[in-house]
Image 1: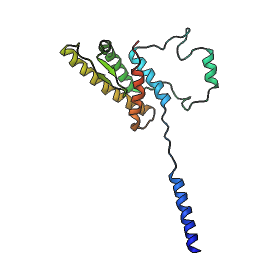
Image 2: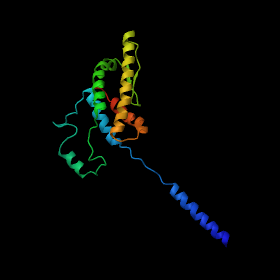
Image 3: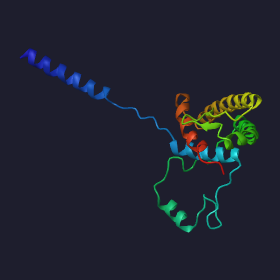
Image 4: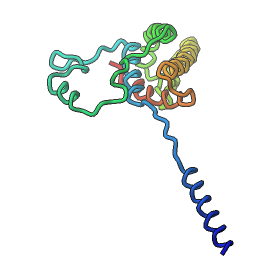
Amino acid sequence: MKNKQLFLWTSAIVGALTLFACVTINIYFPAEKVESVAGDIVDDIRGNKPPKVGGQSRNHQGIFNKISFALAPASAWADGETTVSNPTIRSLREKMKARFQVLTPYYQKGALKEGANGYLTAVDADGLSLKEKRDLNGLVDAENSDRRTLYAEVAKALKIDPGQIDRIAEIFAKEWQKPLR
């Protein structure tokens, strides 16, 4: 009888420990917020303005959108700012804007590719002179270095774990890959 009680107690304790050990910790990643920030930053760097629809920007497309927004479930980021900025991000944006003007002819020649990882790659330099190839490689290195810093600063500003920077870069990649306007 004593062995049976010991077995039942042991089984109950092991069962309880197993139940508690199976608790999953879900860390929230604010993908929608990062997408919004990425869109704003990339549009700013490329000099894109929000497209007008019926005289209104993409953020205010009429009464229907306002009503559907009011009736939609609240977002965890509803009270947060829609832009992310600090002195480092502002400085990076300005440097990247200026560099984008220099990179534009290379984009047009097909010498650059936006990777799915959020970084720029020189791909087809056949039609370029030796000097242009050297300049292009230097521009790509500088751009990727600034992007790396930008993604880290966005993570810091949004209080996202630094281990998620690659995920932030992948979200930015979708914006970088959009056709130039």
